[in-house]
Length: 315
Image 1 (cartoon, rainbow, N blue to C red):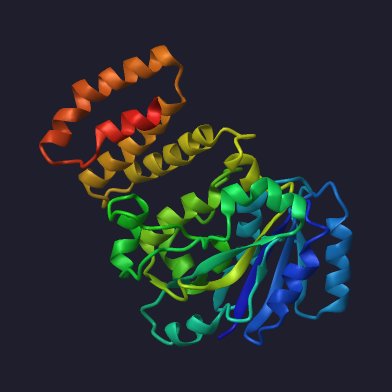
Image 2 (image 1 turned 90 degrees about the horizontal axis):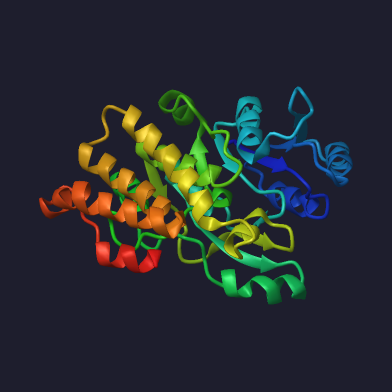
């Protein structure tokens, strides 16, 4: 088992050494691929220091030297990787010693395309904890139950009740399966690019649960996380969700094998965020459109949604 760990690096000079060294503890990790994404801090200098210090660390940048975001940086890492398995790590996060314990046995089964696990929380400062504990607490980011691969895609769509969340730091993929079954890796989104990737990944690949009850990696929370800006509404979460579901909707409508009821479900998820983010007058128009055109379909059993709950969320 040879694992390539891919780390996009942007404005993470303070944290990248810990991330790299957490991956170096595993003999199964054959290389750590850093993609330095035109950082405004000293991250590039720190990356070069790590390359000089550790033989398994490799450094790449985009050809034009410009910033392309985490998704495009991961794509470059996938392109450069040589391991038979691919794992990901954000530059301000780190792995725990049990990171690949489940993978060692699961990937002996050739039917396993990918494995996912649970993510914990680490606060880098007391200030970060005081600011963001209400967002993350000490909760695990995890899928709540052990699902079969066929249940993962509808589970993410909300069609299997309370499902939970994936984390990019806890995902390990068979490289061959990724190249053979998906024609697009990460899309060029600045926010939620990993969530969009998970939807398509779980449709095309057979993903299995690893360790879900305890963390195998830690999310590093500090003052400048992208996700904290969203969760604390410095960036409007509804706006970013609209863009996410628009991408998923476009993909689903172009994918001929996706059933019509799932396409309808995705369409309604996209519309619900559009309604939630609309001005008051437009909200009313969108809700009337929903009642006139979509509610009969719901009544006929083609789509299961609690409109009362939706309208409560909107207002």
